[in-house]
Each structure stands twice: as C-alpha cells, then as structure tokens.
Image 1 (cartoon, rainbow, N blue to C red):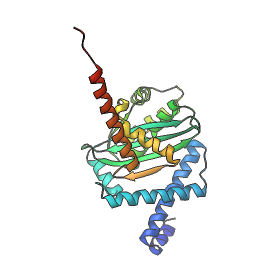
Image 2: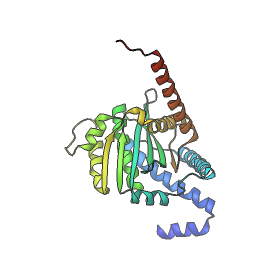
Image 3: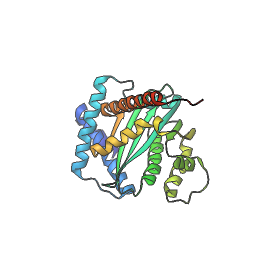
Image 4: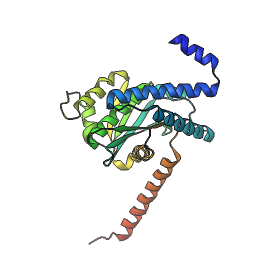
Length: 250
C-alpha cells in the first residue's frame, strides 16, 4: 500500500494529488456511512461531493481566512482548548438528518465547520445523540488535547457527562462517546441554549438543503454566515418590539 501511494504521489501534479486525496477521504467516509448507517454511496454521489468539496475549499483559500491547513488547526488544538458546537437538523419528510459542527479556539476564531448528512435515523432525539458522537470523532481526527463539546439538548449532554452505563434508546451511542473520552487530555460536555448554538444548527440545515455533506477548514459557508446574521437581526428586532410593547404596573 505504501509503495503504491508513493508511486501515485510521484507521478501526479498538485491538482491531481488534491483530487486523489479528497477521493480517498470520501471513500473512507462512504465506508463509515455503510458501517454505521447501512447506506451505500454510489460513485456518482462520491464524485459530486468531491467536486463540491474542492469548490468550497477554493472559495476559502481565495478569502484568505485565518487558518489555512489542518496542521495549523491541530497545532492550535494542542496548545489550548477547542470548543465544538454540535446540533442536528431533521427532515421528517425524507427521514434525513444532518450533523452541524463548528469548532472555535479560545479566542473565538473559527477553526473548522462540518456538515454530515445521514439517512435512516429514526428520531430527532437519536439524531442529537449521534451528532454528539460526530463531535467527539472530529476532535479525535483533529488530534485535540482539550475539548469542550457544546450542544442544546439537555438530555444528551447529561448522558454524556455521566459515567454510568446508559440503557436508554440511545445507550449504544452514549457508550460509544464515553469510550472515547480517554483519547483526550481533558474533555467536557456543556449545555447551551439554542440561541447560542445557532451556527451549528444552520450548518446542519444547509447540509439538508444541499443534500450533501461538506467540511471547511478555517471558516463557514457564506450562506450559513448570512443566515446567522439574519437570525441575529431578527432577534434584535424582536427584542426592540418587545421593549416597545412592554409596560409596568405600579
């Protein structure tokens, strides 16, 4: 295998090698989807996701966002704590769900964002637990030492915090999460209100809208960023209306 990889890299151009590496990564992603979701991706689906992935990364490169490589992300992760926000979006009509993940360092800078589209996940509750597992796996992939996992599902967060054996409907997923805790120097799970977890949810929604997964280093999609700004604008407008309509009784 190593000889074959070495030969391929010796023969190809940088552009070809980028395509080759993305292809290998998505084939591995397809393997995991088959293993955990019993869904087999077609060659056409893999090719489309490779194309979309390249387009998104080219856009990030053009904008010269803060971090340019996974190596930089990993170095930041080793030096300090990284917070991973996770949330799920669930489409009842198609029974599809999606994971939305957003990574920030201690200064609040975005290290990466990821959306993973799933199928055949029975309920939104199960989807939320599975998203927590995806957050932990992303931390392992990026070789983080100290990690804070943040979500807006109180039940899932409490089960992740517990060290007791979980026998609920999502017990197998929770046990998988707990078994991976020793991969980190320190890992904590915290609950936040939905208002503070907006971008993770918007990333998941975008995956359902696009019907595809994506991963970006150093930023988020422009469509997600704009949707987040709209959410904040609507929230501020709602607060102003509430203040205007409020009154005090003495």
